[in-house]
Image 1: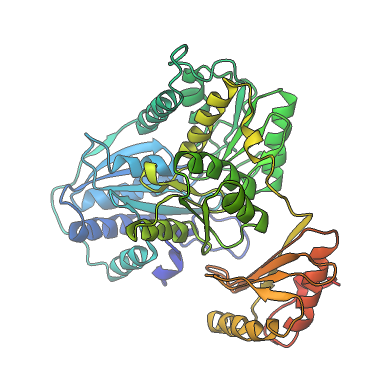
Image 2: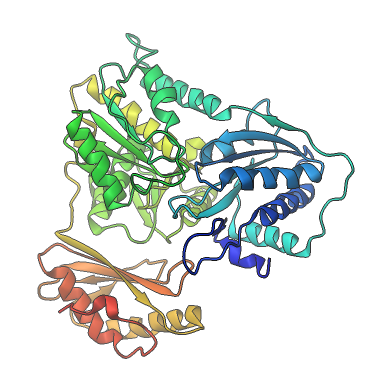
Length: 505
């Protein structure tokens, strides 16, 4: 492995695991996975509780079995016992670390979320939560040094079906949450709910969670795990994926549709009319539930949430909207920080569908998010109300767009910072434009010029030499008007590719 640190993707490991895609060479091989297993054993030996036991699971990716086998071998060779959980979800692998009887000090999920079939990766957990960026850096440093634990006694490997146990936890959570004395065991009886797992790891939710609760799951689709993802990308943000589940809801006359990403840490839903509830709509919906339970508390979101959502949380729900940085670990850590300061925050959520609740260990868990919404749905059904009615008054922009501006400089991080600093000065001179305050990422500007009525956010990508530009407007043609005006200002930056903005007026 020439450069171990190319495997770092924020707080995860990500790499190319299979040949077959042009210009993408394998850098996450079985040998690399074995050494990562050995490195995790060293990390736990220094930072763990001395239990010397790790749980390992995977999503449906084609490369999953061989990488899991190698990773487990690395742990076993280091004297660690291993629970092989087989097909699992990312949230379930965290739950192994806090389970009453498993005595596990580390959990690992082999997944690359919604990335293409040839990719794979790893997410790491202890009872304190998921690894941060610094933990991944430490792990890769250990792997690169190859100073592993030497032992003649190998750890034992045991296969367990943990996803069924995790599903039982969700079932009981929903039963207790609805607490219907007339049908306690089957609070979802009379509801037709379909699941789209996108051939990822989320198929268990239909048969192991919804069916025992009395729901009719006929019409559910793509439940079988298939790492080629032959039907659509398992991604609640993807248009094709959302169109598929929306069509299925209408076709089968379902009361609700549920879609998960590959490893089930993200989700979205569809109402009975076939309307997608993801991104800002999903944040608004779960915020309605959380702020009813915890009035006036802080909802932490990422930076690209809409002005309409801000109004909905602060004015309509009387909560506090704290718009922070992109990245699910960023919003989770910010919510943790606020709570430590005595500012009550029960929800940290990204527009991508990562939602972490304080009541659930601040674990970003798509299945738990859906469980929370199902509880609310069942309660509202008793009053002949629909779940989606909670967001009837959420304002939606007339237009929205995202433009990805490529930085054509080797020192892309410093150049991007320079662009943002200079642009801030230029914006101050623009009539009808005012910077949003407070703002924690990039530059966000409210635009009230002629034909604009919206806002834009220009920021650095978390990992790539790209500056994403998000624009929203409440009037037709507003996105082009804002983007066009910004285009003229950005022409002065010679190393910033503006092809994405060509054509904006």
